[in-house]
Image 1 (spheres, rainbow, N blue to C red):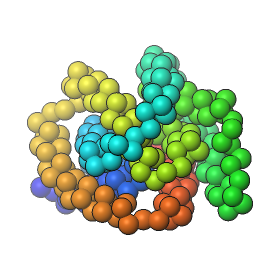
Image 2 (image 1 turned 180 degrees about the vertical axis):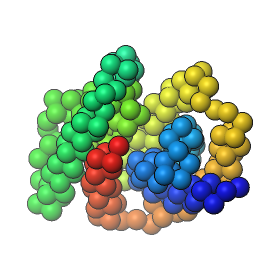
Image 3 (image 1 turned 180 degrees about the horizontal axis):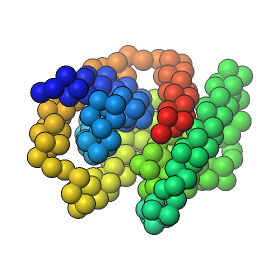
Image 4 (image 1 turned 90 degrees about the horizontal axis):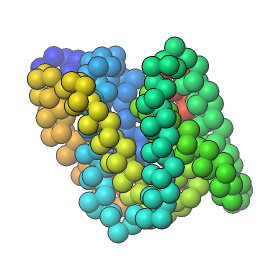
Length: 244
């Protein structure tokens, strides 16, 4: 195993501890470093599988906390957007950099708004269903386009799901569905060769440790600390979109 692959395993381990603690951000945080270490064609399908596995780990321990109404709402609005994104993928590929930066600005602004609401104990965006649905539609489209709609979907969930476990479990259930669709697409298009499958298997072993640690940390985390970490990761997710 090369030094780059070992570094990739470290990135997978650390990012998926965060994924298990909050229910999101693992792939977004891991992607820039992973691309530098093993390349996009290797990193993207493997990180997608890791996202599914980590989400299964969260759901297995917190399935009773899933808010089914919000899960259905998110999937019902997001999935059609993914189909639109997949259709537009080749047509808008040339504008990818601009779109990522625009999405980054939106996510950062929404995170700052939520942080101010937290400090002032006011829910500025909670009653704005139209804004929430707009974020979900945009999240679905960008997930279909660039496999990067997570920050926008999280922006919606951060307003609608205030309980720590409900937030983690419901979002994790969303990722299982969305990322499984992408995994099937990767398999059909031949993204998994022998080397990638072997590295994926090793990553799954590393991931098991990350799930154990992440779930333990999440159980001990206060609501205040959880919200602050969520908003900080939303900002980091938004900033990372400028690097795409």
